[in-house]
Length: 90
Image 1 (tube, rainbow, N blue to C red):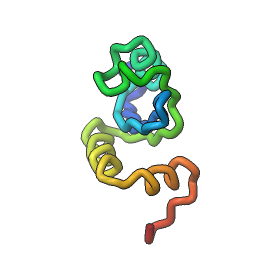
Image 2: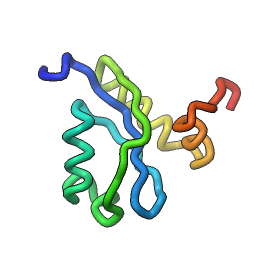
Image 3: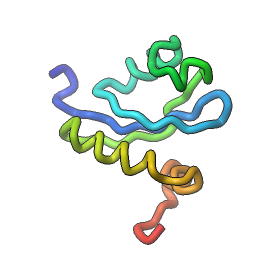
Image 4: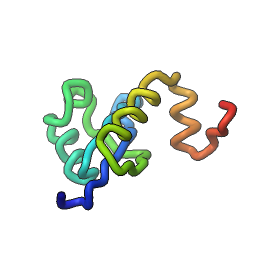
């Protein structure tokens, strides 16, 4: 695998200010896809997007589990994660 088998959990900020969470094995390519309108239905109408956060995982499964966890969070908790102010008890 070109990227050494790494998978990324990412959060993107859309033009309308909404946050989109996803996974990929190529952050640069994925951001480009989103901004070309072929990344996802959600981001296609909210372009441009900007990647604002990412984490690296050794497997797709691990990245997917983290994605599901973060998608269940309220916006304020996601914002704390992005800003680096999220604590274990939050």
